Image: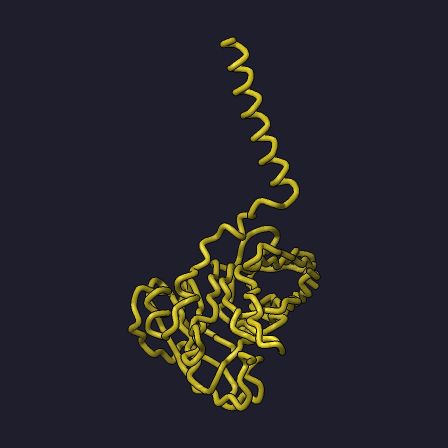
Length: 102
Length: 159
């Protein structure tokens, strides 16, 4: 699994965090071209950390789009701080990404 | 004999412990992240009312203009519908949840926010067909909601 692509930039006193993940996000309802159901495979839990502190924890179902994106903003962030996003899917696969705030 | 028995038990214990540690080291053990209580029943609920009840314990929603839900009125591709929920006008926002009424399973996602987060979340969701998108914000233990209709011209659930 590839890394989470992350951007964190200060704007108007807030830190805007944008995260893009690479994941098929299969709902388990889609059929392939031979008519077989494609097994469910989607990210279930996403965490956002600021300097190691948990700031946001999300629970997702299969209805989040393929190659998921989310954005959120944080207060009290300074240049050089560390922002991390990590996820775990329904098969226990996981990935993460880290970025320094610019 | 007795001593040997004890030694055997001791060895068994140590070996089992070692295996657990090795598994944890190799990343075979579920992390704290995976152990978090993912609300399976809510995600499998097949009606909006049932999903709301499983997430919040009630399906009664109070509309509030303090929840600003942004979604396209027409989505050309149901597989990628951009949604933004802003609840900055509310104090102590605990979570932001998104539902798609007509999806086979309407509960899409919940973002649990800690103090320090700005209550402004964007993501992209799949919509099987035209219908309402509902945002529910929990703030100070109370629920606030907003809904908007999205017309989907190409469904997002494949098949």
